[in-house]
Length: 288
Length: 254
Image (tube, rainbow over all chains, first blue to last red; front, side, top):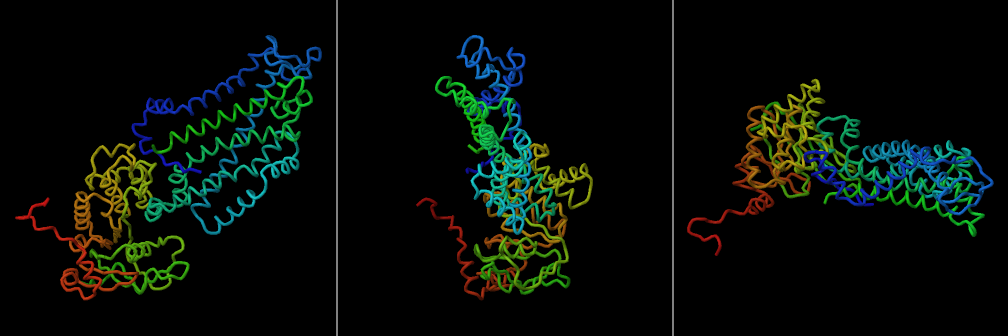
């Protein structure tokens, strides 16, 4: 993992125009944001854009190929695939963002504590993260998801338990390296309370890197949500979800391959968008 | 010139790494009120560690294995690398005001006023009073003045200077030294000055302690010590200072 060295001129002037120019000069961020924005806009406005319901069945028009009426065709229950695809984006992206909030905060916080205070606290947190890392990620996810029951709630619980690890590890390493820098020692000798140093000085310094990791991690989380849906322990039908859509289309893979391929493509599309945003943010924050 | 009431007394201080490797051994000195004492020696001789021990800020893995540090006054430290001693993502005025707020127990608003007064006292330009100046936008000398201001905000009785001019341009070094001495005359704090620059040490300090490999090999009155060194290591340090070549008559590029 490359550490981000913050560009010292980042704050120069602090003009909005300057910021916009930087974004304009970072094509990965620009393209990624546009790709993601398109998806979000579609997801928000889909009830007004599509005449079809995502769940209502129309058995007289099942497994239709793409046409003017049904842009991506219909599934085995006659539901419009495009409509379901975008409604599924609503479900999956909402869960992706919500499920990441608490792990992000706990991970960053615990990482800072471990890196800053060190000693037994660091040993305890590191032991915990290393133990989790030693297990195959999906094994834990599937076990916890099974234990907490299928559905949205299960996903939130699962990622609250395992999602913070990534952030804790990265932020711990960063905090430990910042701690060795003189300004932390300086702040300590000058008598600033530890909490103040952590929240006001350490946090702004570790946050950019943590946000970049967040972007990559969200891709992984999305894939995990979709995988759980595919395995039948994630989102439960009839709520549209890319994972269940892939698995529903599987029996028809030889005759109507797009039923599975299109939601798969949606996952890839979102993944690329988020990765580009993450790369772009890292570029902007990295010292040139 | 020994003072009757030392503000800082160190007796037989020993520091060691976790592996029991001695880093500082049996270091003793005392510092009178308003006095300036110099710790000189090569890098790695334990000068900085001794300072950190006084502050109670030993790096991880280093422990005090013996000796007593008796301090009768608050101490504050001026670091070697001024830019490294400031949070890169926090405006300098804010950092200074923050120290004032915590050390002088005043309101946020008053702390900012005091911070601005300190900036003025240290001869920093008015443009720095704008709250959006970050350390990276300041010169090394300006950063060092901010660091000194932060140390002074603690109202120290003892100022610990860890090679405060080493990282600066030579032209700025003198200004910083002059700033420190004039502040000392005005505020009357005692000073422990760590340096490997004998010229600076000779100018500032009344007494010198020469350190080598974690031990004090020689100490005494500055002029005496420099004129009649008894330890070969002190002699070596003195010999290592390059004299300016004879300028008159000689040609610079021969």
